[in-house]
Structure formats: C-alpha cells, structure tokens
Length: 347
Image (cartoon, rainbow, N blue to C red; front, top):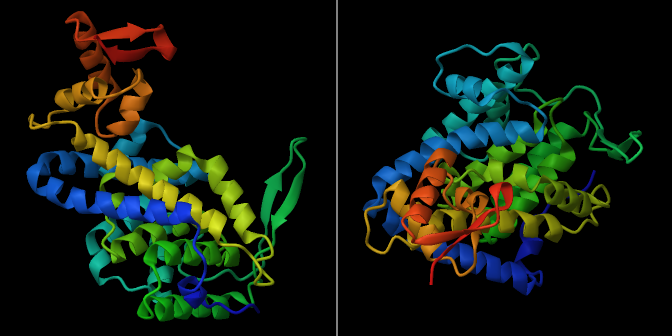
C-alpha cells in the first residue's frame, strides 16, 4: 500500500498562480470580517440561501435531484423524504447542518468521518457509517456510450488502514504547519482515490471540504455555496480530479491540478461574497441597492445571469424588476434582447 505523507507540501515549489490565488483569498477573508458587523441581515439571508444551494448542488453533481419546491420543504422539514433521491438529499441536509452548527467541536478523525457518513445515509435503506466491504471501481462513459473503468480505488481490504494513514498524515501535517490551502485539496484527493464507502464518496468529500475550511477560519461555505460552484464547473472538477489521480496507486501523482481547481473555487466564492458589498458605497445594503450598484459599477455591459451569480441571495424576480425600473428611469440601457440581453449605465 502506498505511503501518505503531506510534509512534502512544505518543500515543493508552489506555482506563482497558486500563491496569487491564496493571497487573494486571504485579502477578502480580512474584509469579510468587518462586513459581518455592518450587514448582519444580509449575511443571515446569504446563509439561508447557501444551505439550500449546497444541498441542491452537491446532490446534483451525483445526479440526485428533486424539485425546488420539494427541496424547500425538505430543508424546513415540513415534509418527509419520498423515494431514494429525496432520502439522500435529506441525509446531506442533516450532515451539512451538523457541520455548520458543531464544526468547532468536530476533530478530523476516522470517527468523525464515519459519523458524517452515517448521517448522510441515515434516511436510506442501505445505511452508512462503515467502510466498504467489497471492492469498487469508478466507471466512466466514452463518447459512444460505452462504459469503462476510469479509476480503480484501493480494495476493501486495504481501505481501513489507508483511512487511518491519511488521517494521521493530515494531523501530522497540520501540527507541522503545512499551508492549509494546500493541505485540504491533497487530503480530499486521497480520500476520493481511496473511495472508502460503497456510496456517498463524492458528497462526503464536499462535506469534509467544508469542515476543513471551517477548521482554518475559512467560513465561506456558510454564506456562499461551495458545492453549487463545483456543480457549475464540474467538467473542470472531473478533469482536474482525473489528472491529479493519475499514477496515484504508485504514489507518483501530481496533486497540483486538483489543488489549483479547489483554490479557484474558494477564491470565486469569496469574490462573490465580496461583490455583494463592495459597491454599495454607504447605501443601506438592500437587495435593490445591491443590484443597482452591481450594474452601475461594472466597466462592461453585464447580464442578468452575471448579477445573479454576483448576488446569490437575490431572486431572479427582484433582479428583473430592478433592471426594468433602471431602464425605465434612464439610469441604464439594455443591449440585445431576451436571453442575451446585457445592461450598462448611460453615459
């Protein structure tokens, strides 16, 4: 079995692009701390919407879906899950809630990982909380529809020891001061490559990512959904995962493609949070004011989709109404029509 040791991250030559990304994350983290005191209501709304999008996005990556109306009801627990998909969605809701509310007391241990998996699978007939008993493979489909073995994880027999080793390697690296933004993606890649459970490995990896980010004071997942951002960029997610897992069994894989992707996602989430406030300029942070500020401060014509991405807690109806009012009042002009329409301030 391969050896796990993350201390190499202290000595590797980190690409300049990753250093720049990490620096950008750090700068926005500092700004966001003061914003929480200034705009508590906005952060409350962002948190509610982020939980919804996280449950929806993480399950959608695995092809697990229900309607938004049913998801809203599952989130507020006004209905019981119906069918296998909703059972898995309810499990993710519960595990996500546990992390958001108890992360400060949750250590990175095998017991924590197994308990999270138990909760994740608690509404399904299969149950969870135990490592796989039979070998599994990751199957992909080529352009002609033919299935093939894309990756062969560790065997069921090797899994318990491998999980013990990656947890110990993580603890050792943390104690030795390895940069968290490099350590987290490497740990997650190894977790996915071991593929320790019969079901739920992808969703578990995203729950563990959230927990690890919390551990280092990076609470972006509370306000902007990391899972939704991964779902939106899942072609790059799978490509980077595939590239970084090549030669993994021999311990010769390159962690950097997946690390670069993960840091880009985290930075993108922090930028979305930053944009929610950066252009308000002293106005009360209402949703209408923030939509107006987003358009008026943009150097280029901006689309409705751009605005919704920048302001994830603002509904499409609110954005459309605000844009219509701004066009009617002569503040901005509309370029193009319908789906491809963009908006810019009038000179």
